Image (cartoon, rainbow, N blue to C red; front, top):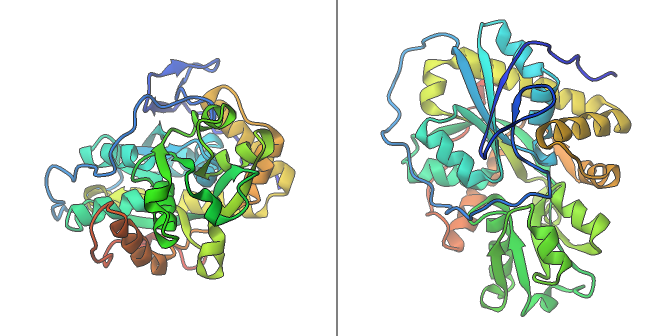
Length: 361
């Protein structure tokens, strides 16, 4: 199976950082995957929307869909849907344009969604849950699943047992993000909360911190976990898949603001359709085709790429499926509340799977 044809129509790509123009003349994010640092750590307690979502009549397809995602392997369906023109072509049928914005972690993407800067986003479940609960269930909905697995605690090779984490210094991509909650919950479960230092650091800074011995490990999504293993001498102490029934837990979900869903359900339908098409392609392509396509997309975003060995390892850790894994959400809420990130609450109404075609599930 060959990758989908590149769509030749122009597209605006915004960035969460200072934009630059690449050799093809389009704005792309200043994202060097796994290599560039974010300048600041943002809080997980992202603001709720300025006002509650109001019942709004269907206004037909949107003029433009503003979509956020990360330059991560766990966001590969977004990478493929955007870079290969799948989403742009799908939206074009309704006359809808596309703008994409690249983020480093979930809380900042949620902040953009809640402020109205973007309409939909690929992100980890924890920031989505926190936004939904803190807004009283009015901010967003999960409209499709994206990825399961692909997160690990990687450490120096001399740490071979959980008990040896005592006294260590560990990193996560961002305070309140999905991996940050996972690490803090894991430490709490093993009575290590006050015995381990957790320092939120952007994915780009972690390799340098690890290389000079400033941290002993990190709980990271792919490809950043594989980068430390393949090129910096780390090993996987804990693969998060081992902690969940049947090894399934949501790493990435697709969300849209409730206001956008109410106004433009046809556009949300096309977004979910493109997500499903990209997932189908990823699950049916051979390993080399998949590797080349993801590498190409990452290179397009950042002007560089990680090694084939790193990306291949990362892809082997992730499963792509549009099923939202709704039965895991209450556990994630409990985990976050248990470590003081967000509050307990009901996830009822968070998932809207009506846009997912039963033929594609």
